[in-house]
Length: 483
Image 1 (cartoon, rainbow, N blue to C red):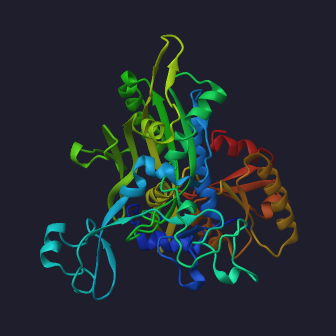
Image 2: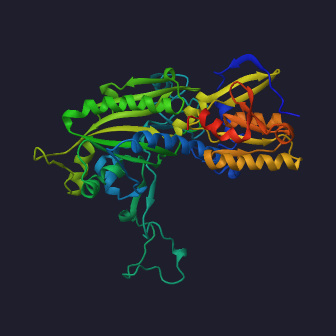
Image 3: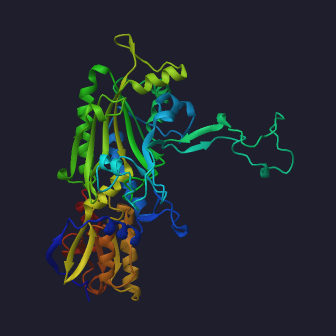
């Protein structure tokens, strides 16, 4: 008895990806769950399950290999999430990191004034009606998107119930209800960039790099979005992959163009087709005030063409702002020319979660097998959570299970991303691994045990099956993955 061969129908709907399909698959197969789901969830918050962690980690690994490991001009940084609030005052975030907001007087829903659905902003302003319930909209106001927090014990963070005795600090001062505690105020960072700018001098003193050079960081950022939506695309907690690349002002265009090409190369590395990523040159009137040039790289998501990544020429704005606010000189001395100046900065900024969503959207495929629908993720091996799944044909036959375990351990030593699966019949296991995005499945059957010690290797995309001697299986797989 050998693995049953499948027949693939001609119908193939590679463009079948919808948000409903993707979200359903992510929940069903353990990629991504709604945050705090058993309590009804929390808008804009998402939890990654085991396979999601692996997928996201592989995408991050590909990014780090391209932008850090293969280069000699990059230095890694992992800055704190909570920083001195003067950082955000210096850059203008404390006063200007805002979105326009309106609130419905009837349903109390809040909306970004520039994100109304179904009509232009001008039409909504004229009608002054809520797009959800038809209630009257309030006047437009600004909303600061930074999450506030407090550092240390302060009157603003201590309740009287925290003490059994007198409510006093060590200096004897009584805690007064309602006191602001401004000295303890800080924020969860809305971007990872500033952690690199404030460490610019530390990097100069520690490593003495020569221009041009860059700082690389991946990590969480937080924005209290008015209206989080579209699954991972606009969330309140997300992960960024950013570079701050410092250059002599006269060389900024050369560096900008180089990162422009590298950005496209990275998207190809993770499986986004060239025709699905578009460049959008941001006009002067729409650019951030600190930028002299910005290109948005947009992806054709199921809900439309939206920003995936940004490439900005930030000039010397950040280093100069921090120099002014902190009083610390953040200039650079060119040892050859003996000139001192503030470097300018090129910033490629990638949203890791948005990249995960783009990869899932691009990989999602539907076809038919024997009249039955099949869903699969055509993930590249570079990002697939599992490279190979190993099956015993029957889980109740000890010799098959024992041999399958032996082959699983053999492959695991070399390929690492290998899974053992004996849950359900062989057809269900194939369907499960297809949805996970596993490129190859290996089945151990009775021919393996009793005949020729060969195994069945099944290809995810075309479902072709070949027999491979078990002793040659590791080399065969390494060849498939070009390892």
